Image (cartoon, rainbow, N blue to C red; front, side, top):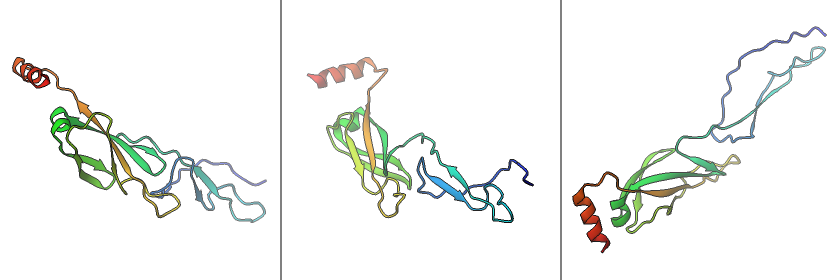
Length: 144
């Protein structure tokens, strides 16, 4: 039919809001047209890699935030990474491992425009390790 099959490498600009399963259309990069017709389109199927910090569910992002035993007991602030940079998250006193903190509007923008999801931070209290005898005695006294 007068066609030549070839392999080529293309650069694809991915929109910021594309999600796994989405398709990107590359006009004119598909099969050659027949009888002088324009070339067809190539569709690229998107698979978004896992992020080292965030897990994504719809427009919401989830992360774990390690906090010290002291901060869990007394409260304080911890720096949290967001897509826009680092922000301070207030930890309430007497916080237990697993408590969820919501940061409104710090998630992912909707593919359909407009809405932005939330960043949901789950705290993880780090247990003290390699305690000195004095530290063990203080914790024992605190427990009583």
